Image 1 (cartoon, rainbow, N blue to C red):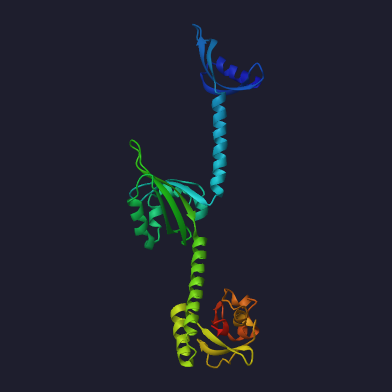
Image 2 (image 1 turned 180 degrees about the vertical axis):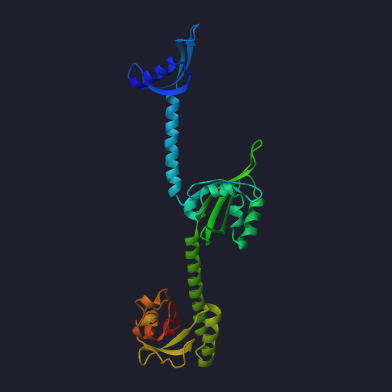
Length: 326
């Protein structure tokens, strides 16, 4: 502190005007105080500095507030960089250009935040063509304060499309300020993929169950054969299928009807618990195997003679009696 005082005193005596020089001093009780100093030299008739006129401003509270704000900003930046949600403000007209986007947008899209402000059409230009009309329609008819919520595909910097959940409120401008959207952007691509996979597997299982209901309505061989070939394609869209019938005499499942396999493939007989079909017969419940090649339900024979990657199967039951497996 003594060194600062001497340096400032030397500047004052040379006739320098000091404006808003920030210093830290101590009060009589020893507590620190932040001040700003303004000085002006007083000269005699010969132009020599004889004295200095000065003013001190106590800026301790202001400095503390600024320090707290900087710390808060730093904490906010850390949070924004690590949360999965992107925050934004965008114009409520035209190309809905981004006015401000949180820095973590680069982690989710590959584009730095500054790019959105520099290129007003960036967001709109990278909407998936199939989603553009619906998105613009929703945004153009929104009302102030109403929460908008929609999902769409957006092309990232690497050229891939990702799904985003966009939630925003329209805020009307005051005075000369234009209306704007304030909202959040959440990447829901993995959720979409999981939902699609679940929907596919569910529809496949329901399709298989629909077939089993039809199958159990008749035990005549001819209608049974026709139904297997027709419904397997229509309902499931599978590449191949097998109908195993239960043989009480041999206590085994025997492949009776096949679809999509070579005619040279020999018949297959499975015991209860053997392979996917045997497991389904034993447990009397449907089964979906997503990775057949590494599944515990596979068998050496199937690995050698088929190229299955995924399998789904359903038991054929009639009044609690096992008829077979599809």
